[in-house]
Length: 362
Image 1 (cartoon, rainbow, N blue to C red):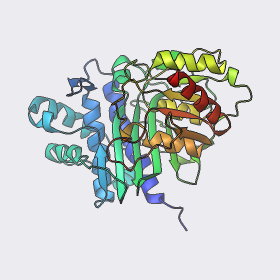
Image 2: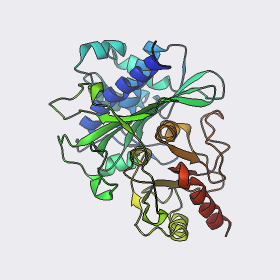
Image 3: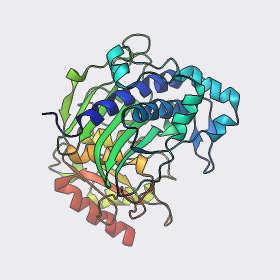
């Protein structure tokens, strides 16, 4: 008997794998076709292309499921040249394994189908039914800077995350590699970078190489390379390492420094973009991830946390907001009932939460 959500997990891994073929190719281009959205955040050719590839696979395999995704195609319909540039990338992004490509439902057939796939992510979310949430490139600023980013996909059922997958092309394959900001700029075609994290509720979390060396093994899938991952035990919290967002507009770095000081943590924080932070602490490369609210009215997006939340939990960690509440993915497109994020090993999470409350209330 197949484990729960086996097909969903297979499709999610394959879809993320295929999307990273495109994001890696564009990553090494001088021009990434950057636009600015209404909130002034950047979006690239790779954001649109990766979302088209993932949504296409989801629509082919789960046509009745809702999709909540970050991007929409109106800007492309108004800019034919940019749309064609994205299509030029989408149409060649394929897995070399023909069976795996067929399992996904085959390639996107034409430019109009690509635009329709992008626009399929307009779902409203909620606490009923099956909802996929997609962040085609989490950490776009890191992507543009040559740093860390993640391709993120999660399945939410009745408000709870059941499957989560993160593709992190610029993280080291080695699960024992220490958390370090110096890993921000990878070596082109290096087989040492590119890792996929995945989890199914109740079945633990794994990592495996993305195997995406450009022009070599790009698109080959080797599920037998999967390794079970777990958060490392923290015997002395003063020796813990924590990671935080690069952008000060995403999290209060000043208050995070005060929390580290209160906990007696002596290592400097490692700043990196995207849900690569969740994957890093889930496999024991780091210990804590803090994301503190910078505005009282700010609401986190579900696609920025759903996959990472499950992967850390299945690796033995705890994830809450700054009030100690679990992240609620059943409130629509945002985490409307939560403020901030604290992710840590279960045995020290309460200690980190207490220190956070003390700093925020002081």
